[in-house]
Amino acid sequence: MTQVYDRVAVIGLGLIASSMIHAMRRAGLAGTITGYDLSESHRRMAEEDGLCDRMAASAAEAVKDADLVALCVPVGAMGDVAAEIGPHLRPGATVTDVGSVKRSVIDAVAPHLPPDVTFIPGHPMAGTEYSGPRAGFAELFDGRWCLLLPPEGCDPEALGKLRALWTGMGATVEEMEPDHHDLVCAVISHAPHLIAYTMVGVADDLRRVTDQEVIKFSAAGFRDFTRIAASDPTMWRDVFLNNKDATLEILGRFTEELFALQRAIRTGDGDMLFDYFTRTRAIRKGIIEAGQDTDAPDFGRGKRQPGE
Amino acid sequence: MTQVYDRVAVIGLGLIASSMIHAMRRAGLAGTITGYDLSESHRRMAEEDGLCDRMAASAAEAVKDADLVALCVPVGAMGDVAAEIGPHLRPGATVTDVGSVKRSVIDAVAPHLPPDVTFIPGHPMAGTEYSGPRAGFAELFDGRWCLLLPPEGCDPEALGKLRALWTGMGATVEEMEPDHHDLVCAVISHAPHLIAYTMVGVADDLRRVTDQEVIKFSAAGFRDFTRIAASDPTMWRDVFLNNKDATLEILGRFTEELFALQRAIRTGDGDMLFDYFTRTRAIRKGIIEAGQDTDAPDFGRGKRQPGE
Image 1 (cartoon, rainbow over the protein chains, first blue to last red):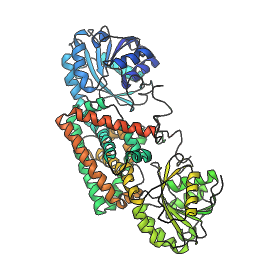
Image 2: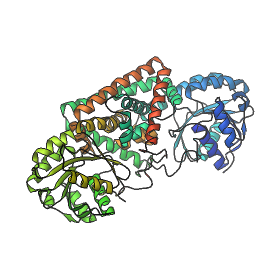
Image 3: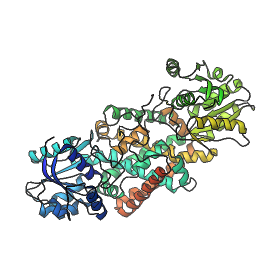
Image 4: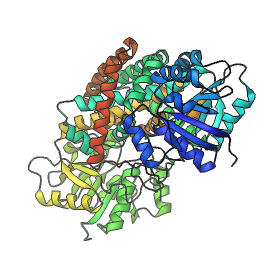
């Protein structure tokens, strides 16, 4: 594959960033990759593993001369990082991010960027419950979506290069509008995560069922919830605080539906339950047909171990 | 392995029953296996595949001469089946079941069984989202728990044989008391399933996010929910109707917790969210350490395809 960017700077070296670095390397998409992370232990791990070509001592230093700057920090930290790097960006550079929320990131980042820099927000729809510089692997984005949210009048050449980067890293790129993005993600990702966190918390709280029993006998449904609820706490705190309205709206609808199902259980309305469960089964069928999951019990995740 | 039962009858030929049959065959645990299913299409599939050694024309016929009768029908159908087979059971036979709810099954089944028959309720803690006679596979119970709920004064020889059967099919057997079983399962399985069904239903309802978008972009959290919500509608309707009190209690606690988290989002209480998510992450760690899941991204499900 052809090199897309000469010099790439990656700020924040977590799961997504380290996967991007492995994926860029796999396809030879970047000349030099410079990295920086606020956490000393993350910097040390990246250093030890030779994750980046060069480690910088600050975000400002990392972005100097970079053609592409990828902001891979928690959503709530994007504004501060943008303020720090703004004055040090090379004219003509492209800045992108990988945050799971877009409206608040755009509002926090855009004002700090000089006019001769192109900002194209992004959101790769991929992840695992692991985090940190050692959690990444080159295949994370293979066959997954990466949403790009170019502003009106975005430089087509800059957009074309960022699309080429994500395509080269294995993803399929689609463009979306920020507010719609935030609503879609509230439905398919943010609300489900909060619900999983809640259910795992309830299990932990219950006195009459011991923690040991919960852990020992945990069956498929609950095991999957605990996996979701093991995702990075900082990242998810920021997601909820920064996609507040859409998440609360979906949770409101969720509670309404849950009450209707609870009522059906209480009144013994088996037909209502059966019809509901039949409908949700059909949705799963649609997802498998759309190729977003396989019907193999391993979810198409293959045999990969984190950190491989 | 040594044969445990000479003649086994399996009533209801779904995922669990067909997996039991494959697992009994794998280890040579049963002499002859006779099967029956109320559904004509299930009977035909079982016949075509040679699933059982013999197919019976009715449940009553199937259990004649059987040393072990395994009731593998939905929880709500257990009482009717017991009423039908009761008069035809061989003296000294053992009857077990595999229902996910135990108190209501015991109340529905026990009165129909003659005194010279031993009833030992059971619940193998294993499953997939697939159903029917072709969904089963011999490894389903390997390394999983099977809970047995012997009544007071249960014949130790009969209990020993049933334990040997489940151990031979790969499971680890543990005994539990019915009401406690139903509460534990409400926490780790029944409530999580209802919540997954609800969330998938909400996504489907939302007008501003198209079904296509939900399906196309569905990320990890939601994909896992849809898998859970694809489980057999009849089985789960019966579970909720027959474990009503415990499920409603857990859902009540769940709603309470969810409201507290929603409130933290609304008021911007990031510390509360962070602490909560950190705690749930620790629970996941406990589950992996307890060996009930692996930290491999494929959940330890390996490369198995359903129906293999």
